[in-house]
Length: 57
Image 1: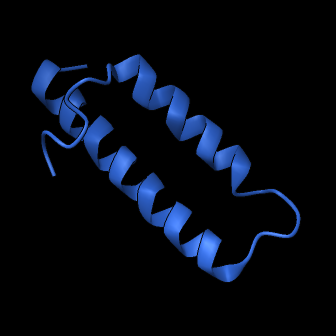
Image 2: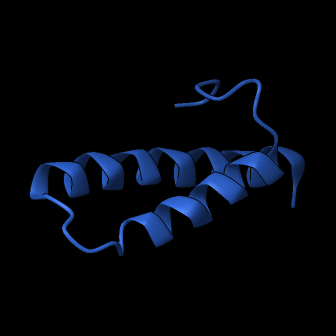
């Protein structure tokens, strides 16, 4: 997945991750929305992990 978010910093990705985690808790979420948002969250988490490894955070 590396390189999917080249213009976003580690801090930006962490902010997006936390926002998505909260957004997934909203009332009235559909199964389709939940699945697609969880998939996006997984991609963001993967990118964060790659950055941690690359920059040794």
